[in-house]
Length: 112
Length: 114
Image 1 (tube, each protein chain N blue to C red):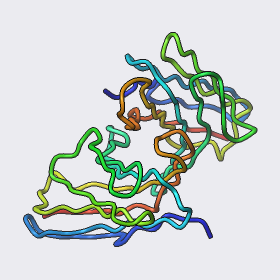
Image 2: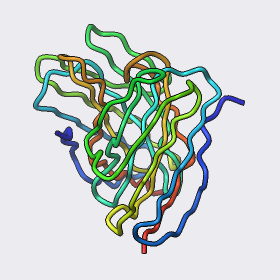
Image 3: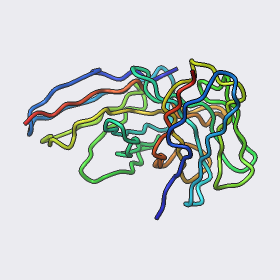
């Protein structure tokens, strides 16, 4: 089952902040965040693991609430280059499955 | 240069004509996946592999086959393509035997089935 992302779309002015949310109905082991620009492959932003470990780019901030199976990506002081579609991907915490399931995306547009 | 390569990048074919999309990575990654991307549906995992000779179904495996005979290669096979398999396909790889690290994506293969 796909994680649910919200909002589906957001429009910002340069310098404004945004939060993108990702929630799952299953207990999660990892949450991934990627950004994709039109016509290109997704690019890694951050991964958050059960237990608190985080790996990613220094300028990206995210949180992972394991109890609520929710994650949020925080984009502060947005720049034009932040425009694109943001995807969260989740892997579950139980069993032998090693799937990575992505949400349907959040389209972010940053205007000058 | 560390990379994931896919071939072909673009393919137009007809219903029922078997095809293979190749994926290769030069980073010695254990975990490899195939995704399809359709408007409004995000990335959906087709198959994944945790290591050589170990593969498993993702969320949308119907109509696809994979094999992992070498660590670097993970081809996607459509034995009898149908128009509903028209999509943008991405291969990805990462360290470890699960999706616990950064996924490196290939450039994508745009497939049209007529």
